[in-house]
Length: 101
Image 1 (cartoon, rainbow, N blue to C red):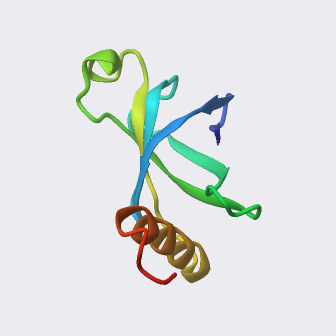
Image 2 (image 1 turned 45 degrees about the vertical axis):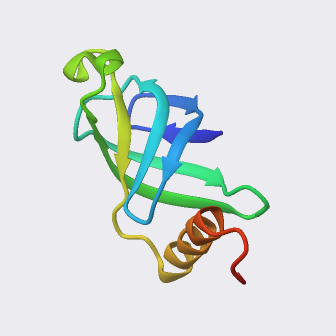
């Protein structure tokens, strides 16, 4: 579960995908395209929460209706090296579960 905070609201969404530069949400969040948000979440198997920032992005999916129904993407900007490493390790483990962490 990801907590998203903008200047006017706070919402919770499930993620569909995560990478070092983005989060893709399962359903649109009610923010304007390019609206800056703070996202807080824990990676599976990691109790420590990450806090990241970035603008909301329209991914072009039908349920976003070109941003009129919200956005499903969060572009991640200004990640700390620790956050970037934790996300990269998680993605690498998901893509190749037999590799050492």
